[in-house]
Length: 324
Image 1 (cartoon, helix red, strand yellow):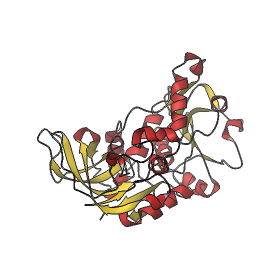
Image 2 (tube, helix red, strand yellow; image 1 turned 90 degrees about the vertical axis):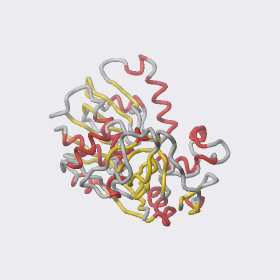
Image 3 (cartoon, helix red, strand yellow; image 1 turned 90 degrees about the horizontal axis):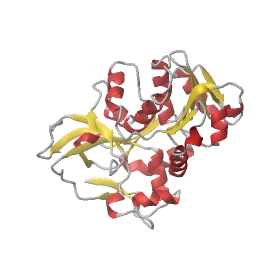
């Protein structure tokens, strides 16, 4: 089968298309014929090997042999199932996040059946592949709010990216007043998705804007803990759903200490696990209440260009990889 392989950390030039053995499903596994995948920030970080702490998962000096195919999001059809699999059968259309084993940038991938859900009927494979990681993190972030959202204020930092475009829609479905923060060239798309207010991050620091909100969904986590707390209303919640692995670990470590969440403001890392909420997203998509925003679709052979596009941060929504 064709797969995109990298044997060294570095730029997109390290990605190569190769013929590799087709995997076989274990007793509890499903073999998926992958029709589409999508790029997430972790793909970029693991390709670069930065920050260095990421290499604890992939290999210190170079990627381990079992971690040389990137791609966590997949959408495709079931090719074969192991003898213990009960949820799916060959021919079923599925999607899911393979974050613990990766391998989505390939024609086939093996995955435990619990990592998959039935694909939305109204979505194409490309649209479905844009959902699992970004959509689930956005859904989990919205659910971190301690207060019922109708009429409450939500600010989404990085609203024009993959996670942010889902978060805008989910917050509006919940009845919230939404402020989207991102680069100037993304503000029009953010408003078109339903944001009530937009902020150009290069011109205004939302933590010093003078207006506090009930919930911050942060897709980047560039600002200090003190600044983020200052932007919250009393009783508000800050939820980090994106940013570097190093910053995520820092936030997780600090959150273990009670003083970190002192008073009536809560700061938390969203890490409830992959695919937790994917079924809810499928229902919303099929009901017409949620739609994946796709910036561009690249064929698998053009993965280097797709990764470069992601690195430029010019995209709105998700960059999808089609696997014909």
